[in-house]
Image (cartoon, rainbow, N blue to C red; front, side, top):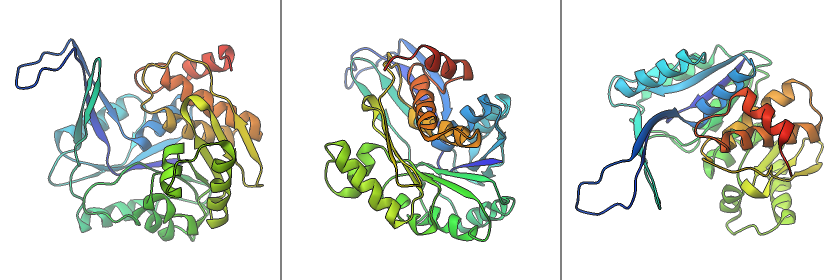
Length: 302
């Protein structure tokens, strides 16, 4: 079983707009609602490939109910902790000549809510995967992902961490199977802008020395770099695509890495498959379907 954890999922309200005029009534030319969150996105794509996955996390209010209903309707199993107050956040995204996003903070997680979540983690067994992805809401410490890994260290669980800053670095002592920073997040850890592959590889090796088993660095249109558990660096060029919306592309690469690992892909094929999953999602609005990934693999040009 592959469990994904999304502490701060969201309902994204996306509106297509023209020029926004301040202090006036502006009207959208189109709108849509999408349900997301990094772990949720990973579960969506894994489901497309028939993997057994369950989405965990916190939900609240009518928006939380809409989120879990949407996932269940799409065939993704869920086991969220429902909060007694607040609501799952709504993020407003204005897309036009310029793009503006207003992301809500999300509901507060109380001690009893967190205790309930940790009880749910007891269901994880040897051989399971656990994906810890995305930001955290109010009331949680930067060490929460490390606390989860610590609580399960007596079990043989493969952890994947897709987060930034301390949320990521605090987990390294518990030897996550994979960490997936993008190049900007890696630069944040370094405290300076990383300008070339050698600098990226050097910092990846440092993170591996600190505990990460595999390090996948996504670089958008510049492709990706994988430092595997044997200390080998593999570079993949990005697929040449017409990007429509890059939201969820990194999450899709994580799903591809997990699925490819479960299928026993060698390192080169594994990295190419992860990149294809990311590219397929970037080609559309929303998370890719299986046929989208297969289309990129069959027709993608590097």
